[in-house]
Image 1 (cartoon, helix red, strand yellow):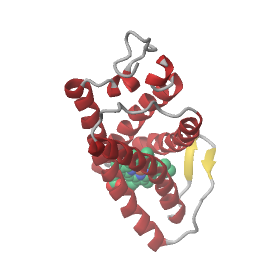
Image 2: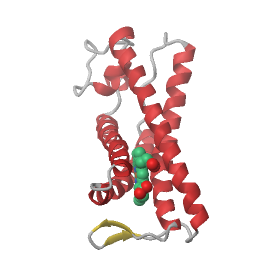
Image 3: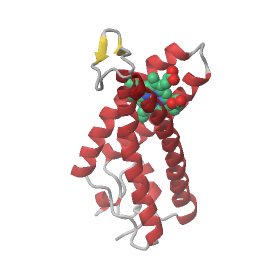
Image 4: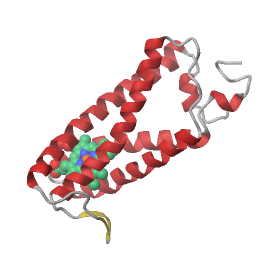
Length: 187
Ligand code: HEM
């Protein structure tokens, strides 16, 4: 029963690692377009970190199917339930789409996608300047959408932690494995 009340340890590690990586990526992306002087070293981090996010989200999705999340508290209002489930779907979509669009746009630009030293990725799209232009704009729009969804998700998490205090936040945030005594909801 206790194990069902919180996310499995591996899911919690993936969640917080990816949260830090995504936030870093958003700021690196903004730094890249804001500062020409720092552009080259920032993009040399942006590309491998973005591809690492793509790999991790694939692992995370498989992990979620094998180790499903704990059920939400039974007394959670229907609207909250819908908002939580929708934001999770949008976040998963963006975690896949953003790195793929980044990879695709550099492919369309016929730009080498160097990850580290001699490690490069193959192009996933043909060289096409118009396609590059569309994907470049798509990358920006998706990045802002990810930022907005992230803020919504974070605000919701804080509301559960500080106002509702229903254990939803602890089910992901607590490093300790809950016992029957410490489990905040469900018995
Ligand atoms: C979760 C993953 C990613 C996030 C959150 C992210 C975020 C961003 C952000 C915020 C920007 C600046 C805003 C703008 O587009 O104007 C940006 C630009 C960019 N990103 Fe990403 N990105 C991700 C993955 C990738 C990947 C995997 C690649 C390539 C392999 C990539 C390549 C680029 C490039 C080339 C630019 C534009 C630089 C320029 O205009 O000169 N991104 N990204």
